[in-house]
Image 1: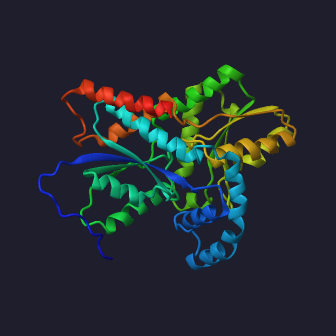
Image 2: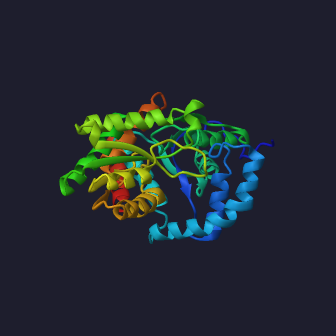
Image 3: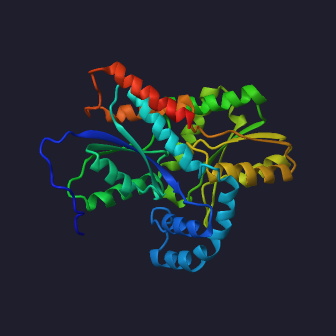
Length: 363
């Protein structure tokens, strides 16, 4: 594999540290053409769909990409905002705010947002920060729970980029933070704020993104980390075990996935006489298609149609102060040993961080 052409090395050039905040990705527009490009990249990742490669590519390009883009485009159109895709809007805001929060702590770092699929791509953002002088790069996925289908795929993308780079920066990866105290506190603050305004439900449903059941048998820790997040939330909230129900959403294909499934569970609750449920998706740090359409539209309709009376969707962490503070703490822990602290003129640096933080809150 040929190396990419790079500018001549400059001795004594200043080095810096960058953080790349990574999310799954989103189409560029809610159109069939944009969805076809996005789904081809996403579903074409061997980490995402672990079936014999040739067979899957025949199914993907022969069937799925002929049918699914138009259906998915309608769903995206139902949640698209004037600013664009909610996932991208929130991810960009989180990156801007994280820069401000770290600046307040005295860390001089560049923070950028990248998408594993779609734009801005991992490779393009890595090129950008490297061109800007970054000699150290922290890769921080917005996936609290590790899975080979998500976190490991980001690592794949970074390593693919590194294979073509002549000079590779020092790289660090955050694999997971499913049990981080700040993350758990932010989730619980979101829940208690909702309960303070609306009262408590009969059931709090914690719906995580689903993966095939076989991944658990193959050693993927995702299921266990989801369950630990739920347990820590229940303990932090101080509620009984019977109030909290863990489910998994977003199945693809006919294979068995992690259970119980979200929508069938909600239908069963309604038929059992449960009148109100609150549904939260702790594995998503930004609201997106799966929370705004699959949960707040499709799952809501299924629950109410089956006899339920009240369905509340609790928003993702998005731009919560507690969440960005937790994210800054996670980043700072992984920056240890790198020269990011600026001892000189800390007040000016803090002021710069405050301005970035305020700009993030205003967007």
